[in-house]
Image (cartoon, rainbow, N blue to C red; front, side):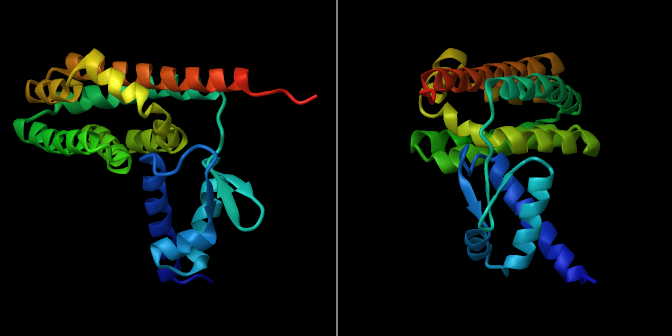
Length: 227
């Protein structure tokens, strides 16, 4: 029988690894090994192995030989499916969060946005991706619908690694095309303008995941076929 401590360690690894995946700290196709994770997390291999196998069973990771797993390589169709589902659930979460908006909530969003701008100016991709994730989930968390947040988390486990494909071209072009849209979200939260906040989130999800789907499509066309 497993001890409560064993279960707690496994859950801690699962949450920490999930946050890394959702925030794009692993790229599509990247290998994740039990040995490296145990070293990075400063834990024994057992809770790491159990957390990894749980993510494999949930379809988040692809099991490999030699005690390792891969971030799956998704097709254009799979990315588009994730996009369409995320549009529904995240716009709903954003709408509910905006309806509960306060000036204090807007301050929290602006604090994350300021750090994101700094990371982007310094071309710190790792910090950039983490802060993109934190901004979205700071917003969604205000909807106070735990079951909805679980669904959104599961979708980001699948799509988070693909945020890496937005660098550098999409990130630089979207700043010019849409300006400071995160500031518009903060303004919408201050004013409880659910329509404004929802529209900004809709554009973000639609444009970014469509861009990713197009890259994957182009890569598939250019990939040489085997005889």
